[in-house]
Length: 450
Image (cartoon, rainbow, N blue to C red; front, side):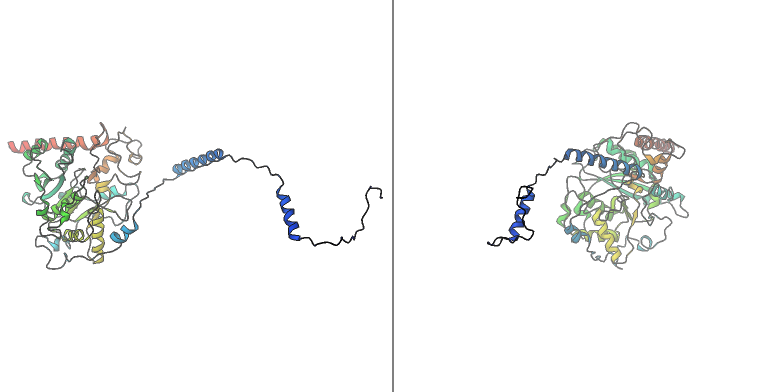
């Protein structure tokens, strides 16, 4: 026995004979034994993580909005729709061919004649007051234009609008468009035709206008099949198209009316702000907004074409050969104008003009340069950028100047809303309509007496 109480074995002890041990089994057992070592696992606090994440998100948002001006617009378009309705550029139907242009359309003047006014800036105007300042370059009326004779009374420019009697009664809210017309346009050179799908002659408001302005105002009932006679839509079942919002049928009526009579189309949900005559050297539609929507860039709320314009002739051919319009859509509006515009370019024909967004739809743009909401009350600080450089918004300041430069304010069918008492629409537009109409009535009375 040794001092330690156990027998010391030699260093090179030979193991006793026996069956060999599996080395892998031994390692496996060793690993299994090591995995049995207890490990302390602490529970994870997801609530705390969520609070931290939300706090960081709020901080990032506040930082972003303080130092930057985010612009986010997300629109989803069906790939099938894009492939069938947008990408193909169809062929024109030949309405611009020599011999096919109507004798009532002066092609040498309307298509190739000289122009004194440019209505298209050549680039998108998204920053600050660029669009409004460009609008200010257009003369205030035809009398301001060099060597341009005024139209005699028997050659009045026709202005057209439309109201569906089955959707809502014609009341004082709708009357403001008429007031805006008679307060801003030249009575001696213009005539407003009020179209409808039913008889409006018994409406007391409209009857009073017909009585006061017998040479400048008229009511007519739309006969769609008759208006479509001689066009590519003649006898088509598409002529029965309508929807609950009066979009597709309204878009159809405007094209048929201008094709037959020529002139300017004004949507009823618009307020005119200045004389439109300086624009009428050109045939045009308007830009929808300043964001340049790739598939919906154009609007027809304010448009001008001459009688039997080949542009409209081609538009009817596009309508007749395309899929039927979807209900409550702009298929016969924005989409139609885009298709036509691309076909014109494909045929190397100068397209119709496109008025910049602010000319008639200045509500649809960036936060810093669009018109304030007409239906929100204000305290004299309508929008950030309308403040004058001298500090504080003044009566007759920037907003007033901008309204004097543009040609209309489009209200986008918000008929259920009223203009706030004392708001900018009442102060800078409605009250002035009343004043101007009173002045013209006094002048008319004086001329009658003399």
